[in-house]
Amino acid sequence: MSITEKILCSKTHEYILENSDNTYTIGLTDYAVEQLGDIVFLELPEVGTEYKKGETFATIESVKAANEIYMPISGKIIEVNNGIADAPETLNEDSYEKGWLVKIEKTGSEAELGDLMEYEDYKEELE
Image 1 (cartoon, rainbow, N blue to C red):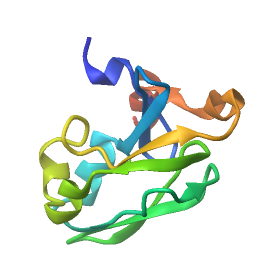
Image 2 (cartoon, helix red, strand yellow):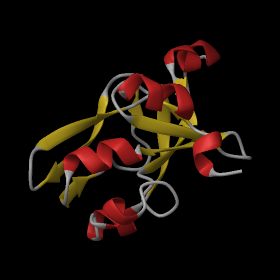
Image 3 (spheres, rainbow, N blue to C red):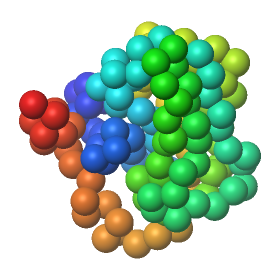
Image 4 (cartoon, rainbow, N blue to C red):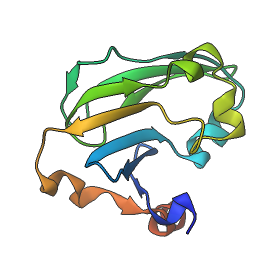
């Protein structure tokens, strides 16, 4: 099973993957990374910071533009992918396996997952 069969995507192009330990991995979809072009800078949050669904938790800059990255569900940052902050171009190569942004502990309700889409539906919406 590929990772795209397990993730949920937001309308703002973030993805969320439920891990086996009830934490969640959050990153940007391949589509978002493709649209950004060459990524040159990434600012990620501190471990321990809490965010509500929809709040900006990171900033990404490419040769084309700077964009905010939004939290797809409420949660507390428990891990940050520091390797990607040092080498943001990794996102262009692999936005799922190596290019995840943060891992969180969910603080909101299951209902927050309701407006997220399965990858196939997300891809259809882009067309």
